[in-house]
Length: 285
Ligand SMILES: Cc1cc2nc3c(=O)[nH]c(=O)nc-3n(C[C@H](O)[C@H](O)[C@H](O)COP(=O)(O)O)c2cc1C
Image 1 (tube, rainbow, N blue to C red):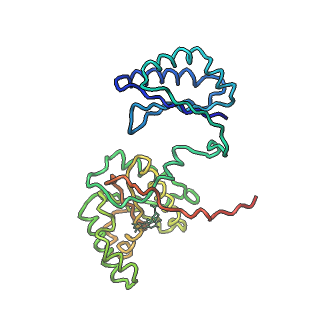
Image 2 (tube, rainbow, N blue to C red):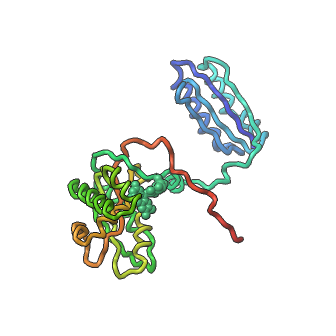
Image 3 (tube, rainbow, N blue to C red):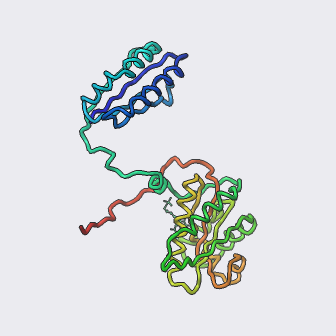
């Protein structure tokens, strides 16, 4: 495989013209025999720098490309609008090709997802909420029992009450780390405008696992539409109070298990996803 990197430096007032010609070159080159990749990039910091990244199966394919009618016609036209000579480098690949890696939109969203703990006040659009709930409902469940119920709470007063009461109960638990969290955390739901309480059906043994699968689906769905979410297990302190958990409207025979805080992300995270231990795989082939 041959890689070509061609750096073009367009004249300030001819950038758009060069882009138009380069796009035509890309369009006409992609169908050529042996063309694996033909892409046009623009430097984010210096828009005059237009780079064409090419990959060819063999050197012969590259030579044929350079002898093609569109190459011979478009390259001199582009050349007329350049500030300086195009820098062209060709490379042979020495390492394994990245194409061996399986990649798609879903896998990228799973890899990108991270808990959001800083929300905007603005409420979600109804369609966004429904998309997230639908993803929860689409989770797998043992025996297809679907032993879940989703209670959406957008009443700020109630959300704050659940947070305050949970913290009070955490402090009362006498468990040191929980007491510390309760004392330092201002709001268990990080002021998210929506919380979704997931309740499990009491007479289904796998309800906890099934509800957890539903939550993971919702977290991924939220990320896929760039909505922030965090699984809030600490809300269980509120749920363990018989009296308090009555405040969570749900059908008879369901017990609240977890909450998920959902809302628009206040700021895009710059730190990337949380670190993962990769040393967790055993193969028995
Ligand atoms: C069962 C469960 C309970 C959780 N409870 C809380 C919680 O109460 N508060 C919180 O901020 N995060 C909570 N999380 C989120 C985890 O802290 C988070 O998923 C983990 O640190 C990995 O980070 P990531 O989600 O950004 O990949 C919970 C996650 C799970 C699976």
